[in-house]
Image (spheres, rainbow, N blue to C red):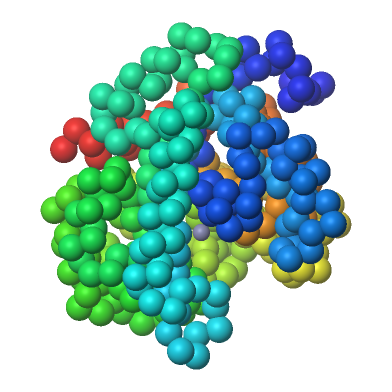
Length: 371
Ligand SMILES: [Zn+2]
C-alpha cells in the first residue's frame, strides 16, 4: 500500500467499507454554503477569495468523496446552539430559532434523499438493506447512508420535541456541545445537569435514543452515565492522556465507557490529535500531525480495554475546520482508506482492522437497535 493513490479506480475496488460516526454535513451545506454533491475540488474552487471563515477553500468532505473512499455510512448531525445574554459563543437567541435551524438541516438531508445521494438509516432493516446494496454493487452512485444525530440538545424547545425528532429519524443525541447548554454543560464548562437535563435522559431512554457522551463536561459525563441506562457511545473523542484537554477523555472515563459497551470514534481535528497545537497558528506539517497520530489514541483505548472492540472512526472532518487543521496526509475524507495499512503497521490483525473501519460501530448499532 506504499504507493496508494486515492485517484486510482483499481484501488476503489479493494477499499474496506468504512463508517464515519461524526460529520456535520448539513451544517456545511447550509452555513458554509457548500453543495456537497460536488467534488471537493469544485467546492474549494468556488470559495476562492472568500475569507469569512478560516477554512474557506480547504474543505475535505463531500458526498462524492465519501463514495470514493467507500465510506458508505455516516452519523450525520443536526446542530444549533442557543446562547443566553453574555454567552460569547456563536448561536441562536431563542430555542425556537435553534429548532428551526435543525429543521432546515433535516430538510437538506431529505433533499439529498430525493436526489438519491443519501439514504436515512434508522433501524436494523434499513441498515441491513443498505449494507447489502454497498456489498453487491461496487461502483456507481450509491446513496450515502446516514444516521441522524443531534449535537447539543439546545434546539429541543422542550422535552416533547424529542419524540418529534425521533419520528424524523433521530437516533443519537449528545446533550451538550461547547459551553453552557440548556440541558447539559459541555466542553470548557463544568457543573452537573439540571432537572431538565435529567428528564431528557429519561426520555431518551424511553425512546431508545443513543446517548453520545462526546462534549459532556466531566460533571455531566459522570452524572449522565449514572442516570442513563440505555446505549452509550462517544462519536468523536480522543484521549486526555495524549493531549491534555477537558474535551478529551480521561482514562477513568474511557474505562467507564468500555464497561458500558461504548465505541469511541477517533477525531481528526488536529488540536485533539497532537499536543501543543495552537489554533489559528499551528500548521499540520510543522506539528507533524499526520493520520497515523490517531492510532496512538486508538492504541491507548485498546490498552485500557485489552482488545480493539471499542474504537472506530468519528472523523469530524470539516467540523468547522479544514485542511489547515487536519492531518497533513488527509487531502480529502477518502484518505480514511489509508487507515487499514497504518493499523496493520502497528500490529492490528485483519479482523481488528475491519472492526475499526466498520465492525465495531455495526455491532453497537445492531445491539442498540435490537432492544
Ligand atoms: Zn463536536
